Image (cartoon, rainbow, N blue to C red; front, side):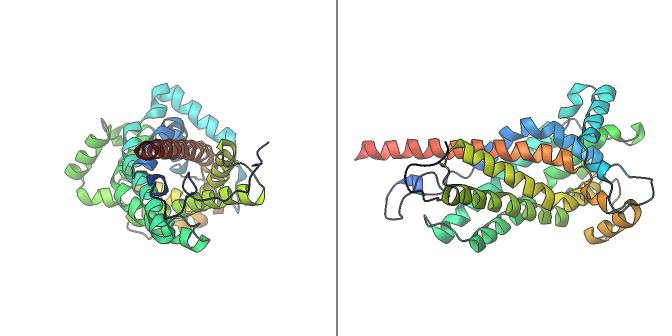
Length: 326
């Protein structure tokens, strides 16, 4: 039921056009589309993101094991969410929502916007090669991760505040208050804590999420003959979320621990990873994988579905205006 009745050629814009056309629909979409789509998705994914942060910051005291599959069980995530609701109330699942929205408004706006613009600069209306997609997503991830780091620090701290001892809880009123108090009490440099890890993760998630989404979408349409519609977008985005979660998990765990720490010991992320493997087992690098996927999967799906719809409506509006002009 998803097969197109006509030969299909996938482009990364909604409309298939040539550069000679004067339609604005063949241009990159507005820069803010990706950030807006990510903010919509945040309302769905935030409770799972908070649960993931809580699980990742738990330090295991047992002897290290080669692989602890219990860390990946959904029951661990559900148990953690129940504990949060029981001890802190249902509203606690949305602790730090404003910081998450601020982060998506900076980090995702930049990486999605630059990714689309870089693709246009490199390939125009032609289908970019896999190497070109990697280059575009890497560059967009570096810049997005750097600009989104301060809000990410506040986001991680607000989400993890409830599991700290009462005397160490920070009780930030909101994201802006968190940034102000960090600058006042600890110095502005703390907002850059974990910048290297955050940027590396941003590159990984942008490459694994956006590049894989485009490649899955192209494969579903060109190889399997699916129609370039909602089911194709849903399937491609779900697969992209699976890839992104697995690729980013180790750096995500390390980033969370660095940002949530009261005092950073200055260790390189690789050193932290090796120490975690030694003390907690290799499975600790994938701690919170299930809540991370349950968070990133729906977040990726909603983001791309909303983004595709925004692009479709934008192309329709612009083309209608051009038709009226002619």
